[in-house]
Length: 257
Image: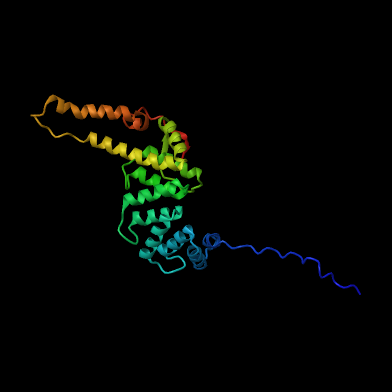
């Protein structure tokens, strides 16, 4: 009778896959039908392990009452913390909470910049919501060309949402495409939105009617117009489309949303 070879190496055991709490929670959250209760438990485990996106998803569950009792105040605290840790989901959901005054006072401007931060990280829905804000002037001055570029950007990122009745006109096409390309760079997006808002605010200030003062000198009366002319010249490359009379509408292009 042959004895077993005790010196032989045992057969290797199959490696046990390591569960990612965030990914497991997202799979349950997005399932059909979703299992929010178990998803929330996995998000809590991810948050406890230091995952900022897990913390953000836990905050979303609390904000909407998905899988656990709704607690908007606690949810907003979690979203603030997740955003501070750099989570794109945290920035996006915090923007929603700030713009809708859920879990605390509303703050349209902060909500807008929370969307900017998320959009700069490639968050598709944040890019779409940021475009909505810029188009309507929520938390900012209206900037419809930037809005159209961001709608285009959100579509490229896979956002299924579409704005109603927003079309890129032929005369806008070049600018919108150029802006959409620049918005794809995270640093450019943040810089461009801020720069355009500052320039629009300056243009708006210049456009305000000046109080009449019969005693003012000719130089005093001409100074605002000279300043305006200088601003127009300086901004022609960035916001020049706002400073020229509109050409005849060429109709929608093949790029429509």
